[in-house]
Image 1 (cartoon, rainbow, N blue to C red):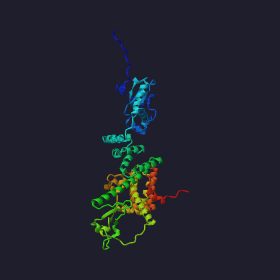
Image 2: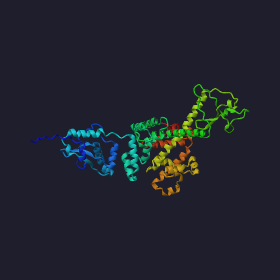
Image 3: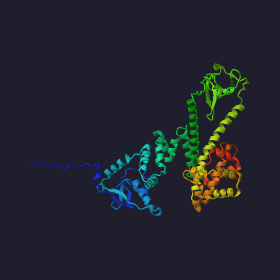
Image 4: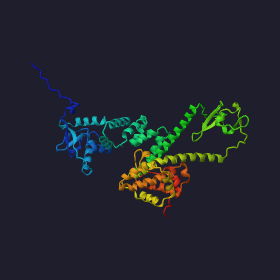
Length: 490
């Protein structure tokens, strides 16, 4: 007798979606969150996702179940669906197309709440964020292979600038821990690349994050504090590089660089300025360089100060002069010297952000009225500093402010012939600003800033404030203009 076997219930196939009907296009207005969507928190789309969907739509299909009222419940991709709804809401006014969403319509899951919730759980649980390094690498590699038009669209969707490829490559020089801290601190791609550029400076990461906090606390969206801190860090990096080069030059010349003696050790070396030959004649670099003790130390500006490592052993005499004890006045002078060196370096560094801001002002479609009036006044009154600068026939800074490629080779006569009427005020301000920059070029200008020079800096400060804090005076500039600031109204 034949044995009758009952059919065993089959287990749901975890890959049922592979056999699901073809992807269909659905109107986002018909999409709602499925009651069995496993994600309960963080269900709103982020700004990056919204920007991406506005540009290219939802690339990855979502998964939905039909509902009795004709809508569809989204159990996979609800944030993507919402992003398309938001994008469609402003598509008309932004000149973008209204798009539909690609979706797997899972009729087989109607009534199967448990399995629907499970599939949603798997989707969300394993949708972990990419590592910061993988994100940077994928940005770099994907943007390299695009046409200019595609790169612009992709950059807009990703929220990155036109130098994203270069910035992504530079940012990858940071180690994984630094990349995680940069992401947690809110650094964008450009800022992460800049951090990588100055990472070797002690405390660079801490200082930049503090500058970013100051910019964010002001709530205007500018990055004036960040730019000034970056300029200082680059100046310090250049200073460290100058010292390394000075040390390498001494090594190449086979001249020992004297270190500082250890605790309790006596330093037998002396600078040549304090020594004489056995006959009492002065010692100089030239007449001492063949001495076995010929050596050097580097001063604060990395210039060699010539020494003899052991004058007594090599027959030199110490100049007969009474040794004065170091006084409090000596300490004060040394401290003042250190301050002067730091301020000189900071003043030179501040020129970069300042001139970048001037170039941004000149590029604007309409020059701010305050900048226009300032330029007109200088051109009409011809102050001494302006006529002195014009005698130099220096055009590189003007060309840079006008964003001319290869400014050192610019033909400003040709530029003038092609200049649109609407850009004349911008060009005149570029000319006047170049003269002002020449006027404040010396590193020690901070110590004796005139009222005329301060007026230029205060103008830029006011324009930067009006431009959402995109430019701030550096600490040394702020210090220099303090006595020239208008008295507060009573």
